[in-house]
Picture 1 (spheres, rainbow, N blue to C red):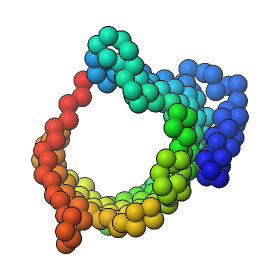
Picture 2 (picture 1 turned 45 degrees about the vertical axis):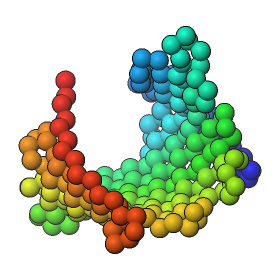
Picture 3 (picture 1 turned 90 degrees about the vertical axis):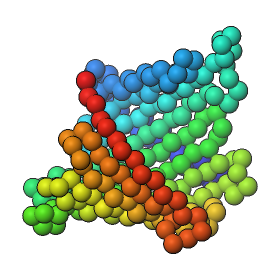
Picture 4 (picture 1 turned 90 degrees about the horizontal axis):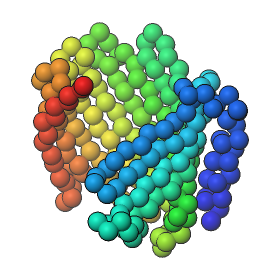
Length: 217
C-alpha cells in the first residue's frame, strides 16, 4: 500500500503546482476520442511550460451495450501527473522525466522514472538510447509491489532511412527477462518496412514483418 500512497501524494503535489495561469487555452489538455460506436475516451488536464514541464490530468473512458447500459469493467478513471525536462544542443537532445499514474477504480498505481538521449555519432550515424524504471502496486495481484526495468538502443542511418534497434527488460514480479531486436527501412517518404524479433535464441521467440503506410490530411 505504500507505493500507492506515494503515487497519490506525488500526483497531489503536481496538481497543486499548477497556478491559476494554467487555465489559458494553450495550457489546457482536452482530447476526446470515439474508439468505436459505443466506446469513448477523453484525456483532460493542464500543462505548465517551464524548465521542468509539469502536467497533470485524468483519462476517462466508458463503453456501453446497444441498450445503453455500461459494459462491466469498461470504466476507466486514471489520474496521472508528469514532470519532464528536455535539454537541446546542436549535437543532440536529452530528456528526463517522472510519471505517476493512479487507477482510482481498481486501486493500482505506478511510478516511472525515465531517461532518453539522442545524439549525432558521425556524419552518417545517429544514436538514440532510453532507459526506465517503473515501480507498480496492484492490490489484486498476489505479488502486490513490482519493479520493472528496461533499456533500448537504436542506430539510425539518416541518409538511407535505415534503423536498427535492440531492447531488454527485466521484471521482478515474474522474474522474466525479455529482449528484442528490430530493423526499419524507409521505402518511400510515407512507406516503411519493419521487421522485429522478440526473445531471440529462446523457446519463446516470435517475429513479425510489417509494411506501414502513413497518410496525413
